Image 1: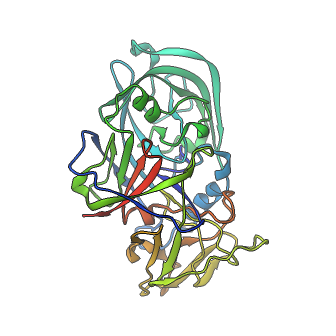
Image 2 (image 1 turned 60 degrees about the horizontal axis):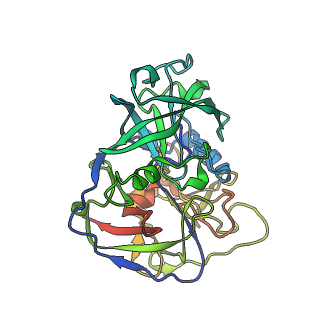
Image 3 (image 1 turned 90 degrees about the vertical axis):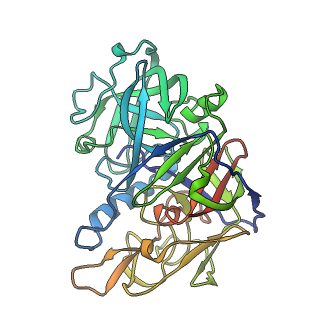
Length: 390
């Protein structure tokens, strides 16, 4: 629900080999740790792949080009954390999203926003209603709309004053069933803002509220966190390998020079003029909150329309990515998305092929990748970094 790209989006254009920039950012900076809670996966309790959920995710991915949040509230692939809005602060459990750039929450006048904590502007001394409207249409047909406010927004102790955000007055029914997540905060660049305003983190950096123009994620079954204003050196070993962004014009955290290997052998990336799924490797990118990675699995076709593949459950497939420095491997455990059906020896792989609208040589990497690395996003360096988890 809410953000189409929950947590982290890194687009990886397959260009010439990149030269990594190594930085040893230890010791622990003065940033702020925000614990995150994971909610489910694409596996049912019995270990069988949840086809319906996966299809919903893939449908949303295909609307990615629109640069608006595209997840629905029934999405189980979220890591959520708290923020406050107002003075005094009103607390919301939100989904952090580097693939969008706006903050929006349901407002007290929203009659359709049942089960949600609602923003009450009358209870904040810093609240100010501003002109303009907000409207989002999501890839699965869900929608949200409302007005705009300025108020104080605090994330992990980092405060942005007079931050513009959307106060939603209408939610479609698909948004009302999630009792946990009540809002979305985008961490992408200003170009992605549907409100056409400076995103929270950029406001905080400009106002000097963030110790550094950097934030980082650790994603796991437990101990997950977003670290605002720096990096948490206790969660990674060695230097952070940074890669410069190819551009910020699109608003995405996009880096170039990627190569992919399977079981240690370089994989060829073929791009054809046709758009038939399974015949070319079209997309890779890194994003939090998706158990599916864009690309080609090379096993048996499970669902050609959605670009899903299956492989023997006892396979130990190691897919790894490199940007000219270290090789960052996806854990074989994370590559297994669940049994194709009860009693089957085949499992669906966390690798899917499909047209996401990001260009023929761009892939989208999801949480299956990010759970294997410490991921750093630097506004100061205009770079994305990776480090080894401890």
